[in-house]
Length: 89
Image (cartoon, rainbow, N blue to C red; front, side, top):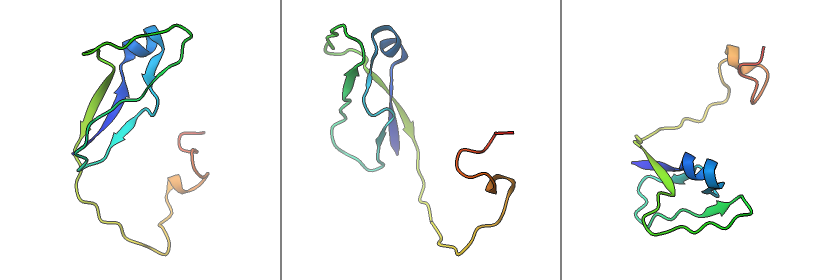
């Protein structure tokens, strides 16, 4: 099991406070303390108090993946146009 740490929409929209590295990735198997580095994007000071909701965790399940090295890939409709071209007409 792993997870993503995401901003709380209320804190972000009302006070411009958000995790610096959003989304933050928690690797499967990580067993250390969870910490959320915050950034204040406004010019108004904001104090985070104990038990404030500063972020949200989205847990994800993972399975064992096997990657295979290949010499070439099959062509598909998505093969043309390069990175970021999907959906462009």
